[in-house]
Each structure stands twice: as structure tokens, then as C-alpha cells.
Image 1 (cartoon, each protein chain N blue to C red):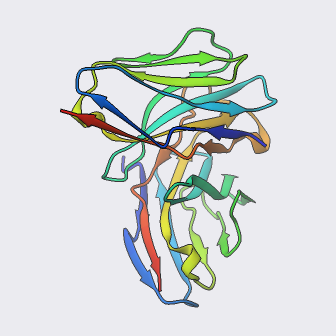
Image 2 (cartoon, each protein chain N blue to C red):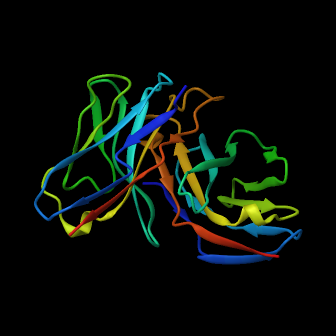
Length: 116
Length: 116
């Protein structure tokens, strides 16, 4: 049971480049989310998904795309990287909050992205 | 929209002493979950404790306990017998029960240092 995995752990991009951050979970969780963490800002939600084929925007979605074709995978795409997207990115997964016993979110180890 | 406020950016505690981290939130929901997450320098997000709003009894996990005041919308974390390994950033988080409220909303975090 690997939990939530993210790749890569570190990435440096030039302004305008595109890339995909990978996220996978093996716990059969319906919910998956992407957050970014910036100093003094806490974790802010970028996009989330409540199941395969269903995604929605979070608090800071601009410049990012997601899709969810399988329960296990939830990639985050940066379309044209900008220095403002320099951040640490976390993927998380959980069961539905309707599951009263097991609804806490499990987090991946994070990806540190620098955009020059 | 739900908001979570952690007004103290930093706190310090002497080893073996007790410290309380404050958190307030705003919601119009009656059923929800509250969490405290710990983020050590390794960057990994670790669940410390969770509370369900419909339960009046305060949650406890070994040296960690909460003071949940639903009417006041307050959710503080008490760490007893503080240890050097407790030094980390701590995030308070809210999760609703249904629909768009089922997202996890974080406070900005508090950095806890432990003095030997």
C-alpha cells in the first residue's frame, strides 16, 4: 500500500513551459485534490475531484488543468508556467465525508516547483 | 464560503510544558469535520487529530487534545508534555459534509518551536 504518490519531487521550469505533475493513490479513494502551499498562505485548493470523470475548481484554479479518467490518477497540468506558480504542490485523497469514520485526507510528499 | 483563521503565526513552548494553538472558523453548516495537521520540516502533512461537529465530546490522541466550542466556532489544539519532535507547522482545517462544502479548507498555519 503506497498511499498517495507524487512525481516529480522537484522541478525547475522556464516561463512559458508546460508540464504535468503526477498523482496516484492506491486506496480506492473517491476524492482527490491538488493544493499549493506558499509561505504565509497555508494550503490553497487548486482543483478537486469527487470521482472519475468529475472535477471542479478550487480557490486558485487559473493556469492549471486537471482530468480524472481513473479512480487512481489525478494529474495536474500547468499550461504555460509563470513565476507566480513557483510553489510546493500537494496532492491529497480521501473517502467521501459521508464516511464518518475514514474521511480524513491523506497527502502525498509534495512537489517543489520553481519557475524561472 | 467557509473560512479558517489561525491568528498566531508563531508560538514557542518549553520542553515538557503545555501549549495551546488557537483556531476559529466560520460556517453556516451544522454538520462538519475539523482537523489539525502537522507539517514537520520534511514537508509531509500528518494528521494529528480530528473532531466531528455533531460529537460534543472533545477528541484526544495521547498528548494531543482539542477544545471544541461549536457555538463560538473555536477549535484549539492542546499539546501536553511538549517534545522536541513536536516542533513543526500546524494547520487547522475544516471539511463540510456535502457537495462543494466537502472540500478541505486550511488556515494559514502556525509555526511551533520547542525550547530544550
